[in-house]
Every structure is written in structure tokens, then in C-alpha cells.
Image (cartoon, rainbow, N blue to C red; front, side, top):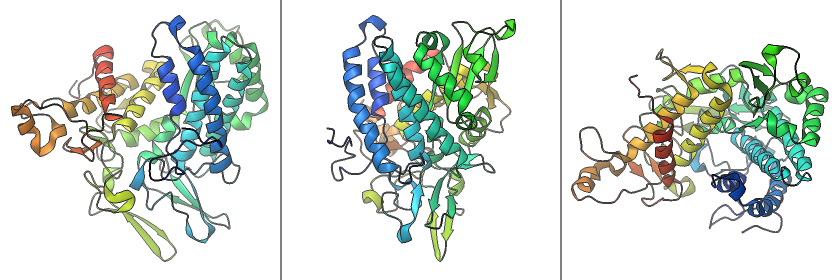
Length: 447
């Protein structure tokens, strides 16, 4: 269902709320599900693209309050992850700039850019649309990186409250909100770009004439084992044999620079923060009692605690918790993002995994290991006691050979399933992760 103004409803009890704009990504995934390119449904892709254009305009018109490419979409599917209800209006004319809302729009732009690239191979008219979404991506990513949504001292992305006077208060709560900017990344092949002269000329113009947009956005080329920031010569042939561009050359378009990516990942891969036995926590474990996060503004103090299981609040009905548990859809996006960064950086980018362990791994090895942690929720424990997903009932399920339940979210410490017990929509993504493990290989924790 698409409203005439382009908005897609969030959920059954409030159509006007906003869930993350992942529909373009879903369309792209469905289109590419046909392994043979000539069998792909371009009519479906074209039809979906035009509907998505309406949805894009709805977001731009309704959620960019100051016309500065910084978006506030409300709860954005993360229910109680914030210090307060992010869908509710703030008092005294204050506004909320959201790191995840802004990053989701950049992600939306990158997916629309990829769709337009696909369509342009059959109809050059779409080169213009690809150029527009390239510009949209760089504008949003640049705004996010230059604003206080990025905290240079902490090396993380946060939401920011803006008062009517313009004063800004970063809410330095480490949660999935600060990891969403990692999702907005895509690679472009030189071969594809060379086949679209109009798009290539537009990108060249942006790089040459709008260096302000490229200053804090990753625009890099990878050729002949050399990584460099994108400059106009990198869109042309080079006389330097060591920097020759061939058809294997790729360009990376991403929100975080290489250094910022590393700094955010160091938080995410820390077992005392995000990295749990069964996946990436929705909120950092550092806020576990007796060290809750506190946000003070004027006479008010808001407090948030790490909760690995069910919520202890009535916010959003009290039956959903984003203050600690593992959620499959977000973990799936993290694993996919790591794979995309690996596709560009390759073995040149390594990190301690877990953070501080001294064990260096590539991004592909890390993504495989996180996938293994997630899959282990549904496999029998080493002691044969049953599947962690079934919690205190796992022995009963094992002895009676009962079907596996696809819970809504999971305890990162025990793997126990929480919330709805038949959430086969997004939790079934574990099947994709199991396929990834069997296809890409696996690096065990003790290797």
C-alpha cells in the first residue's frame, strides 16, 4: 500500500509512523535473486523504481525538517532504543537529528542509485536518475559526517537534540543507532561506469567542482592493489603503470571513511560492548547495572539500562526491547555491510576480533564469524542439551523433536528466544546466514 503522497504505512496501529526505508533494498535483492542476468525481471525493477521515487519524495518532504539533509524519522522500527520515545514531539520546540534516520536515507539513496544503474544499461534515460541519487547520497552522507552526529572523540555516531536557539546536545548512548551508518555503502565497477558516459561525466563534475561534498564521504578507487581517494584522474586512464585502471577496478561509495569505519567497528567488535556470544547486541553492555547511561538536560535526567531480555518499560506496549537483545534483521544488515566493505578493501583491512584480543581478521572472516554466532542460536549446544533459541524449554523441545521456533529477538548472553515465537518473517534470514557460512567458509573463534 502506497499513500498518494508516497508514504508507506509503518504498522497497523499507526500508519503515519515511519519504519526504515528498506523497500528499495528489498526490490534490488528480489531482482538479483535470479542468478542469470538475462532472466532478471527488468519490468518489475522499472515499475518498483517509479513507486519508490514517490516514497523517496515523501521522506524528503516530511522528514528533512530544516532542509539540511539531516533526517528525523521517529522510532524507525527500533521502539525503545532511545532515551525517550523518538516518535513523540520534543518539548519547547526542540528537534531531534537522528543518526540512523539520516543514515537510512543515505542507504535508500545508494539502493536507488544501484537500481538506476541497472535500468540505465537498458535505457540511457536512467543515467540521469543515477546521477541524481549519487548526488543525494553524497549530500546526505556529507551532512551526517560534518554534523555533530559524528563524535570525533568517541569515534561513534549519536542522535543530537537541537534547541530553537541552535544549541546541540549529543545523546552519547552507544546503540544500533550508531551502527546504521555502516549500512550505506556500495561498490561500482569501472566497466559499468565506462558504459554510462553521462553518469561518469556527472560524477567527474561533482568530484572536481564540489570537493566540499567529497571531503568527509568515502569516494575511493581500488586499482592494481592501490587504494586512493577518488579524484578526477581516477576516472580516467593513468600513465602510471602501478595505477592502471582495468575492468577489475572498483569505486567505493560509503558514509564512513576508512578510519571512521575502523573506529566504529572497534566498538562493535568489543565483547564488553556490542559483540555477544549470539550476535551483535542492540545496545552496548557497558550500560549494565550499576552503570546505566544518563542523559541530563536542564532539570531532567533520563536513564537507560542494558537489558538483554524483555523490556521493563511500557513504551511501545512493553513487548519489544531494543536495549540489548539480538535482532536478526539488523545483524543481517551488519553482516552484509561487512561483506561489501571486504569486496572493496579485501585483505588490506584487518581488525582485532574480538577487539583487544590481538587476533587479526579480515572483514570477510569477521562477517562469517558473526554469521556463525547467529546461526548457533538455532543449533544444538555442544553438550547436546538443545537449541539455545528455546531457552528453558530447549530440553523439552529436543526430547520431543519439536519444530524450531523463530522468535522475534534473542538474549545475547543465552541465545534464548524472546517476544513473538513465530516471527518467521525476518528471523528466517538465519537461513541466508547458514548458506553464507557453507559457501564462504568459516573462521572459528579459536583459530
